[in-house]
Length: 434
Image (cartoon, rainbow, N blue to C red; front, side, top):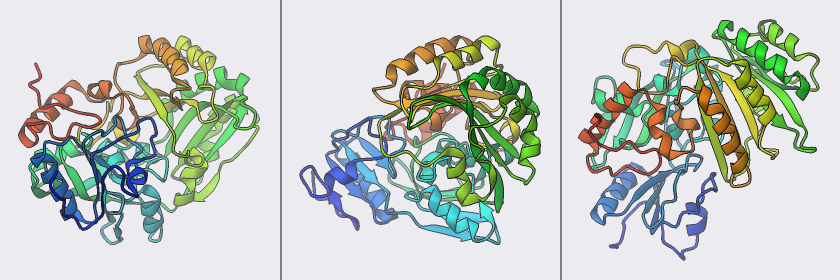
């Protein structure tokens, strides 16, 4: 390969720093790229795209590495981690972030003005990758998907051209970016709306496992009527110290009357072993609700969507339980609310009319057998749909979209990336859809 000229450092196998830069949070894949470009600015991004094209190198982008789905072997790996600038415009309620920013950065910066973004549930997750895949937040029933709040993006296209896209500039590309993942360009700057959120009722409380059947049945019946200010999930988890299986209820309420709203569900669950609900500042609320961010690991997630939760399905969730790991869990989540009421021109994120999901998470390969068994038992009840940012199986990318949206995404891909340069991860090929 010819010499790559960049403002930021460039690493090849054997260089000091190569191993550190090729690693991401997701350890399921040990990438061995031919070259790593640690971008120091947008021009490095553009030069990386042009260099990969010139030398016919596979191309991959990584900020935090939470969303790695395949190894970037033998290619050019563009690291955007250093491009982590966060700017808050409190008057317009807009955040402008670089592709290396994580949600903890945005949460702290916006909180100074009493504002919040539709943050990822883990504060170490990269803002841009999460948002381009749709982004389902603890505030999404209240304000919608994170992708729905995007107002502008600066993008380097597959041809190496730098563009600004919005509802008025390249609207087809703007539509595709808001849920279509990394298929359409490298985003070097993202602007999105913020919301007036200072303090929220939030937390995760724990209960004996024997209360799970009654609580899940109560959740199924209660959730369709929960107010949009309330965002909830019911889980089967394992106690880290003993491995004992427990029931958990997560709640995140944009208001101070969360206990009153949750009362029917809490009555079904009975006396808690741990009651961790409280009013918290928004930056503190995510960790309190989700638990501390997990360390880098090899992880697998299986997620299915459901229109209803029949008794047999809930029995399966309880009897199968979480993978045998302190980091494994099974979650039943209610969607709907603002996610199901997209505004005009909303992007392709999600199956907005489906109210429930069941997601199982476990370390890989240790938990793979348990996840396979659970998935096989859940699938007969499922819609077949999924959600991009929660999906670790790239063979199911198409399942994350409605048929109409996937067809439109493929057509836009043919315009902006006919050679499928951006194919790493959740790929939407530029094919003709019958």
